[in-house]
Image 1 (cartoon, one colour):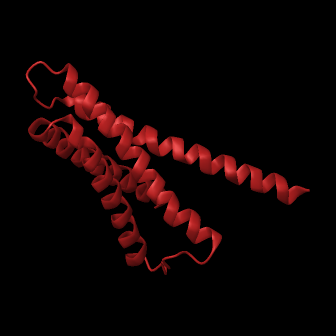
Image 2 (cartoon, helix red, strand yellow):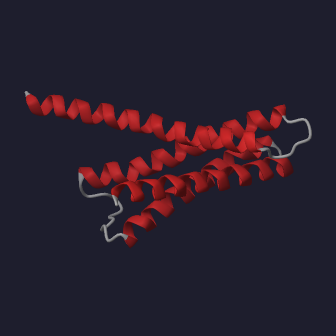
Length: 141
């Protein structure tokens, strides 16, 4: 059951990234690549709000501002996931669109954007893991 939950979460993240890349591509094609910073901010906020909604639906009490360290990591970590993931995906869209000859969204551009989104989330996970490792080393002493 845990594997199924993991796979469904992974697919949901990939669908969000796919939608973000598609919207970012269309906005950049219509309004110029300088508008990608606004798409990035809106995408990160949407990711954060969707995850807060998911937590509420799962029954976790979400306090804003957070009252415990676990809530702080959960709430601000999700903001970091969305912000860095959407930023790298937007940069990928910008680079791919600059290289595009006809300006059409291709499967390769979508795949690169989704990969960049997951790479941004992985970078945030590395920082969280380093913080947890530091906490564990302090607890041993």
